[in-house]
Figure: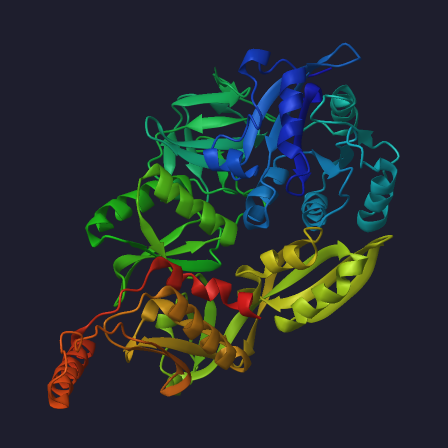
Length: 602
């Protein structure tokens, strides 16, 4: 048996919370890759936020050795992938580096939306899929029904499916044997031109950018020069190695190997996920199929609460971007909030995680404006521009049409909740594309929904109306023109640009009224009356007032002529008028997030 025949490259794919990271822990423990004393839950999840939330954000790898029942020692390269839809591109690149995948399905919950989405990614990459039913130790487990669901919904043969409990370790040996028996071994020629796929990259302050690669053809050796095909940059290899998951240095990486390269690369934007590494001495002519730059879909303004922290925010964003090439950063100036940045994210989870990292790791106090999606504006002169913030929208007279991104949303929900789910989708301007029964009692719905309606609180609402049993997956498929308008918020006639939002004209009055009510709750009373208005252009569509705090100036008058009281009241009135003209209204952080919670009042 040659070297390649003893290698297995595989990924673990699953819906969130189906036990993917726990299964990875058990595989590492069973093969002796990690000593029992060093073992901890979610071993491959290195960030605190990953551990707290129980999610995987960055793809991780581990090269482990397994003595199989046939007496041979196999090298198993495990690639632990993210499960959330925001990181779908990372999942697709990780799967491109494998020959097989373990499809983990929870024995208590069955097939969920992202299970289906990730399986389709694996099938598109021509992987051998091994179904694994996890959590069979739980009293509510129904493995037979789940396997039938896998066959009916996904169409996979489950005759040789593996049943296990990643928590207790039951069936882990069967999982390892299934990997050896069913996942094909890699192929490749070490004398061919070098072709290696970047599956992940991150910045290390001591050595620069570390690149994680899967070698398809050729060989990587220390001291040789490599070229990154998308940027054309050339670098010399300083170190090579693999993660077991501990860092183990190697002199060379051959076809089938998954390991890391340190080559004195200064910025992560030069080493994007999905790019192809080739040799300067013996270059490949064709890159690995499928590379594309990650494109941000949600934009939000990030401002320091204290303007003196602007430079610290700039440094923090630069450092965060070193580890996250998907972030898009550009300076922004707001009349209400001062200097800050417009930051682009892959989705809401990516935004939430990035914001938490900025606040925790760099000790910043931030104000984050409500997120907005990217719109395309076709102007009357025929030009098309992309806008990432409502404040970038041109004047109404210049606009021919506004196009919004449309997402294809797949929802799995219990049959008894279907009426509420359909109602929610219809309220969010959804159009039903498909309706089918995934299994007895479970329905699969496919809708086309405006992406702006999906990213805000759609998932929270879906979980709420389904008592937590519904799951969803989405992808942006196309752009569509609609009757969209910008709703501006004015405080005492002054535009607060950070609170503007773009919505459908039919919802403009409702959103404006809800917004003014929310702001009235969150803005503290001033010593003068504050008018809160929502307007489309010059037309006010909603208004509410915050009554001024009034001091009783006549309290010191005991009897006497009424004109004394009147004189004091007139003097107070004049003072209030002057204060209103020059006074500024402080808008708290909660008000900037009020856009997210407008639907709480429905």
